[in-house]
Image (cartoon, rainbow, N blue to C red; front, side, top):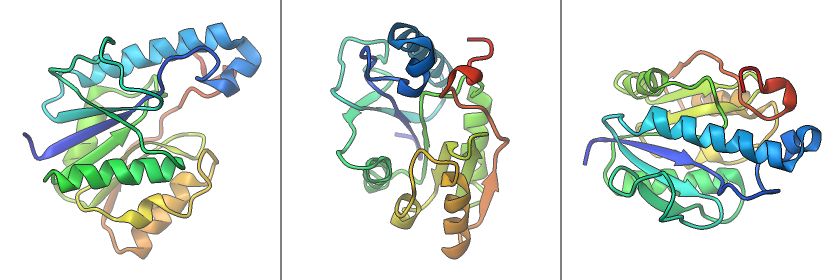
Length: 194
């Protein structure tokens, strides 16, 4: 076990259940194809990182997919809001004895291994780190101590999530670092190279 844990939140790639905002303009089949590319990208940039990794599934734990059990622990997301799901995952990580916990999703084509490690390295000097998305959310959140408040009282999937989270850092007195803004893939205009 390392002192660092990377949590990866994914949705099971089920037609009609992923990238629904994108599907509204490009169709469910294309949206599923895009999401499968995003999953493959997230897998490729995380598999060789020298940290412990756990994949949290939205619907069921898939034992036959590309997230190899020897590399990734596998768990099911808690029920409830996105904040509650993340709070439970972070709580589990700190309960297991990890000293630095970061979470990423599977929506960011611009995310790299280097940016994830920059997040962890930030936690050597700071108590929190945030990688803001250009849509007002975030693609990475990291803490070196458990603070439930960071996951509470947010309007999830809106453009205020990153700013509200930064406000939490300040009100809780957490020193923090900000990574460069990246673009999440949520709508057709976000596709770019995809």
